[in-house]
Image 1 (cartoon, rainbow, N blue to C red):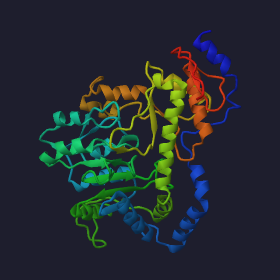
Image 2: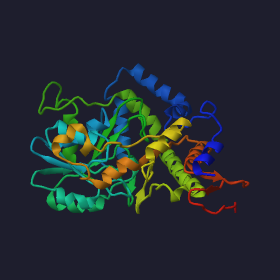
Image 3: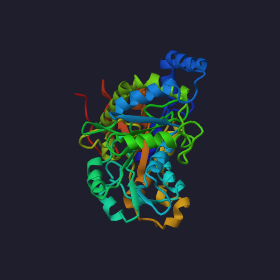
Image 4: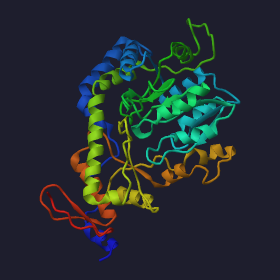
Length: 415
C-alpha cells in the first residue's frame, strides 16, 4: 500500500467532527484571570487617569527589575519602541542600519520612516537570528546602528555582535519584541544592548488587550531622551525641546500587564514544557527524521513565543493546508523576507542574495504553542503531521509510539 493510500484510509474522521487546535487562544488565559483583570480595568476606569497614570509607573518599575536594567519606559507599541530607539540615536537621512531580513516588518520600517536605509544581512540557519559573521562586511562609513532580533524567543549571539559593534562605537538595539524573559548566559533580553525594545501585542508571551510597548536601557541620558521623545518632545508641559511623537502607554493596558506579569515566569515554564513535549512526541513519531525541530543554542533561556519547524522538499505549504483541513492552526513567519518585499525593491536585493533567509521563508512553519495548550491537543498536532508524512501509530499500550512508513523505521515498543 502506498503512503497516500495509507493516509486516505487512516483519515476517516471528517473536518466537521475533528476538535480544533488553535495556533493561539488568549481567551483561555482570560478565563483563568478574568476576576483579576476586570478588577484592574475597573479600578483604572474609576480613577480617571487613563494615560501614563500610576499603573504605568508601577509597570515600568517592575519591568525594569524584571529585565535587570535601571530604566524601562512604556510606549504605545513595539513598533514605536523601535522607532523611538532610533530617534534617540538621531538616525536619519544618509544613515544605514544593519538588521536581518527574516523578521517582522516593523524592524525595518522604523528605519525607513526616519529616512535611513535598512541594510539587510543573512541569518544563522539554526537559530533564525542575525548571523554575526554577516555584520562586518555590511558596515560602511554610514552605518549608524545594528538591530539584532531575538526571533521566536531566543537571544541572538549578542557577545559576538558586541565584539563587532563596540570597537566601532556602533549602538546595538535589541528587537526583543518576541523575547521577554529570554536570557543569554544568565543576562536578560533588554540588558544586552544599548536599548531593548519589547511588544505587548496580545499574542506575545506578556500581552495586553491591544497595543503596548516598552524600551529598556542602562544609559541615563538615553532614558531621559526617550521620555522626551515619546511625549512630543515636551518638557515641561507645552514647552517642546525637540520634535517627538505621541507614543504613551495607556493605563488600562498597564493595569492588565501588571496582573499578567505575576504569572509570566510560570507561563514561560509552561511554554518550555510544551516545546520539550513536541520533541518527545515527534521523536516517537519518527518526525525528527523528516522535519527539523527548533534547537536551543548554548547558554540560552528560550521563551518559546513560537515553535517553528522546517519542512523540507517543498512540502511546507502542502502540510499547512493538510493541517488546516483538520482544524489545526499554523502560521508562516515570514513567507516573504523583507529584502524581497515590493516596498524595498529599490534596494536591489535580487533573489538568492540572502540564501539562508530565503530558505527559511520557504521551509518554516509555526505550530501551536501557548501555556494553556493541552497534552491531547499537542498529541493531535503530531498525530496529524505523522499521518501526513505516512507515519502510523503502533498498537502499543501506554505512551503512543509510531512507525514511519516513509522511512521504513522499525516498530518501537513501549518500554
